[in-house]
Image (cartoon, rainbow, N blue to C red; front, side, top):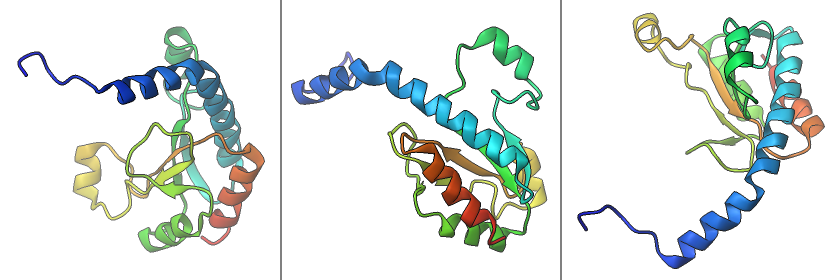
Amino acid sequence: DLLGSVMDPHQAWLLIRGLRTLPIRLKQHQENAMQVARFLEQHSKVERVLYPGLSSHPQYKLGRRQMSGYSGLLSFVPRGNDEAIRRMVNALRYFQRCPSWGGFESLVAAVGVGLDDDTARRLAIPRGLVRIHVGLEHVDTLIADLDQALRQL
């Protein structure tokens, strides 16, 4: 096909169905993520939180001017070596290892674990960085899950 792929009718229906609830889902993702980001920012086992909705983010003011929300995606750097961070990620019960972003569930990827200093610098990824997508589960459940995992560091 010279014009690109064409989705089948069932895929088109699924897309339309998902778009109908997209605004309410995104609103909840970002509300949950803000609460999780604030929790992580105060946690003694967390060195740094990267979420543009937090006033501590270096580009917070720019984000306020350019965006109407901050999504459910955020990153943080736990205190600990690679092995400890792997154990922490494996201790999570409600965050699934992520093959891709964009679903309704909470996801986790330890993207900065296992990087050497040169690679981390080249990719601009802090060593030990953990990326999460905060899903639609009850936020208290997600915070409790993160807390029990972080306490194992």
